[in-house]
Image 1 (cartoon, rainbow, N blue to C red):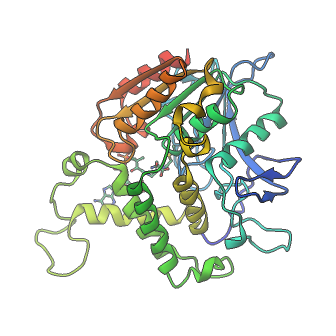
Image 2: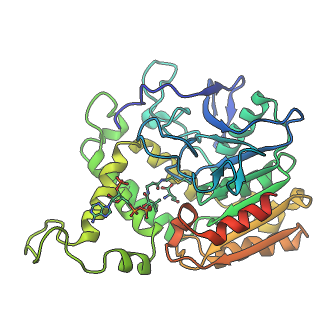
Length: 367
Ligand SMILES: CC(=O)SCCNC(=O)CCNC(=O)[C@H](O)C(C)(C)COP(=O)(O)OP(=O)(O)OC[C@H]1O[C@@H](n2cnc3c(N)ncnc32)[C@H](O)[C@@H]1OP(=O)(O)O
Ligand SMILES: N[C@@H](CCO)C(=O)O
């Protein structure tokens, strides 16, 4: 994806510059968003869904770039756990991304893509932009904020920094800070992008984009989204379209072919510089650090908020132990919190897949 898509996205332009944690500010920020379901007259039924690293605002309906169904069709819609006959669902593309919100591929004041002149952003900056979107939409208090993975980080950040904006917080398969291992995987991915000769210091928008580097970055990341059990069940050591090993470096194994496909198809929908900036935001995420060292202090303003936290037993990226730390912090400030570890074979990406127990938890909590 060398340039921003020509598809026009529904968006608002923020009427004030976006203040950033780095101390910089970003003027003229566009926030692209989608909605589903009617907003009640008293505006009390809005749910803000935060998307994950490579997600976007297209939670439901056909995606305008990939042509695929929305990423949370199984969870959101009429009669679904987040029932759009009852709730008005909003999802915005995070600042720094590439599906219509301002990011490194957007044009700066000089009429050129920001590229690496784009400021480093944080999870809190992403949330701040979405709170400004809510202001523009005239929505003060949300029925709930919901998110998985990086979406869960935004949900926790929202509770910590904007506790009056949401009555309920549902955070799934997430963490309150990136671990050394999490940062290590992201750094490997970033180096793969930067090592691609087409990256050219980020100034590739007028030519070939660093698709090879981005594909390798996605391949490595994708492994962390799955479980060993899931990979073994899906592919085992089975060979791809052949009866014998090639004694070469073709994709002999199905799992190799699968990963190559995941890597390549990703480059059709994502901008490499956005990948650098968003992974950086995730690496910088540390709610305890933001609060001066104690995680519980991050949530002192959120005692009236109801929390539901969900982890998956096969998620080795953001583990049940990570989630328990958040639960303990919420307990310490006496915030009402329920927590469940669900059993699912798919690893971290379980929140996107068919896990009926998750549907039940979401249904119960949202209602
Ligand atoms: C919160 C958010 O915003 S999340 C949004 C992020 N979106 C994504 O991450 C989407 C990309 N990720 C995926 O598709 C993830 O694999 C999942 C976990 C979400 C989907 O899982 P599943 O439905 O189990 O799909 P699976 O992992 O098997 O992948 C299917 C794809 O692999 C391809 N594939 C499967 N086996 C092979 C193989 N042996 N060789 C080549 N390709 C293969 C399929 O053809 C299919 O391709 P397509 O997606 O282009 O149609
Ligand atoms: N697979 C999802 C979740 C990653 O945390 C994504 O690519 O955004």
